[in-house]
Length: 276
Ligand code: ADP
Image (cartoon, rainbow, N blue to C red; front, side, top):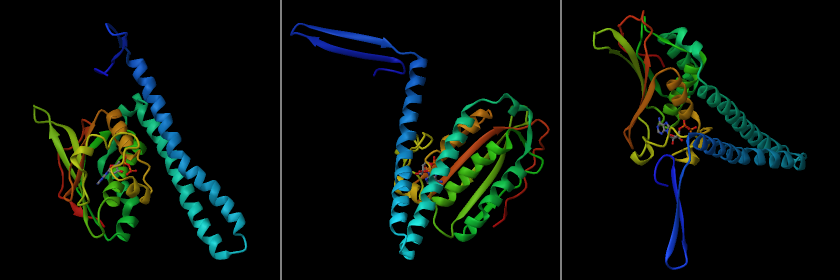
């Protein structure tokens, strides 16, 4: 494999000759290969919870006379079916995030409202884990977008920050306005920072790939589908923005989302204040 689209194959013909074939496999071939890969990955990911559900259903029938076993199997059954439900909804979200939606450009959204909703969703989990979430206010700042899709993207970043960090640690959501060369506010950077386990440098390039996990067992324990960051990346890119990550094992991680600002946004960012 010599480059993006060029493939080289060859073979020996007796002792004096070789033949070499150089094939230019275009973008359509690559897209098709990616689609096949995705289907193979999805089938593989579905296999475990689907066979667990059918085994547990059988076990439940056999244990009908033993209330303790019934309750144990029923609780595992509900964990596995929740896993299936999460996987299904993440697959649907990812496929929606990969479609471009021209209507997005016309809908202005308040950044404060967007972040407040995401925090509301995670308040209970953060409290259970005695974690503090500190969020900057973004008064007057608006971005263009789909509230539902951007909400899911920030929600994924905040739930990762909680899931991959120790109890009692702090999570910060910072907001920075980036100006254009004339000094007018042009884009906004929203950074989600945690004090968690961090990500090894060799994995940093791969965590946005579908189903890539640094520690598959940990991801499974937290109910992760391995699709969260692919959804973030595709959603943010679909909104004309980008996402970057900084991380060091043991020191925590920062995921920064940059989005174009709506032109009537004020360039005022109030100091962060604790909410949980
Ligand atoms: P998952 O459902 O496994 O969390 P994601 O796509 O959201 O899938 O993330 C991919 C992997 O990146 C995770 O399995 C985890 O190993 C790593 N990761 C993501 N966010 C963080 C974070 N804040 N701290 C440490 N590791 C993280």
